[in-house]
Length: 325
Ligand code: AMP
Ligand code: MN
Image (cartoon, rainbow, N blue to C red; front, side):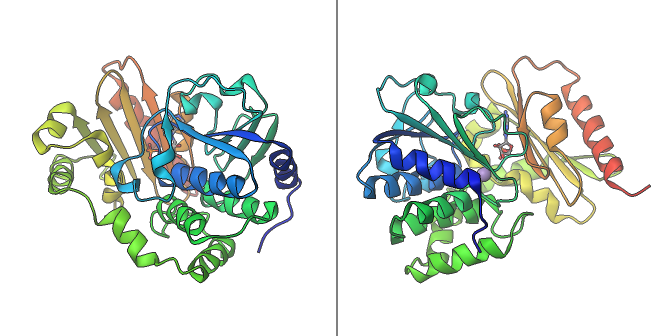
């Protein structure tokens, strides 16, 4: 099911040439960024390379069980004479929020539309359901052994980035990779339970509160969710406990898109979700963010009072544009 790719070959050759690696991904890591990093780091180590895995933020608790997660270094900058930096799952180098990576050739592997091609070598494939899918193919191309721990990490990347096998970009390749993962003995149900059924009661209460305060816009086609520090405090939660909440309103047939406003700390972080052909990535990009057609995000450092209204207007326009005239 692997498709021929000149970019993948160039990336493979560059990795085979390197000896000391920094493997980084985006700030506020998720299942795809962590699974991809840890899988690739293990494969490179198998090949006798020295590898440091570096992120700006620590892994959320639900991902602490990922094989190799304990070795992740948390740092806002790196000083190292490693000969190669591999940056996974980042549309821009800035998404790492780790400075100093570019002091050596960067290998850029990603599946986000609009990736800026910041690497010395770039492999960006929007058709991949997760960066982990690309990493799996790369590991195979490198000739590394598919161990149960690599398989677990790639499985978490795919499971989470497909929204438990519900999103777009799931292909025969996705299932072919998962079949091979299951072949290593990975217990898919047990992995899913660790990721999804291991949260706190506070998280459940926070979810209820956020949904209870949902507002509908554009004749009920847009659901707007809002969270502030007080809601987290009252439920004993952290920002990471919001993971997945943004998808819940899509369960209603009439809701076509979701805007989640997170007023936590300094700026306003916004998550956008949509169904089918509705392109919320373009909305995110117009605010300086990015992502995918159906899942995108942005940060407004200094939110003006009309940000909510502008987002609603633009998302409503995206819904209107997605309909055949
Ligand atoms: P989230 O809503 O944080 O789950 O992110 C959804 C998608 O949008 C992911 O693919 C993120 O990588 C992307 N994304 C989120 N925030 C930003 C941002 N500030 N800039 C660029 N991409 C983002
Ligand atoms: Mn991803």
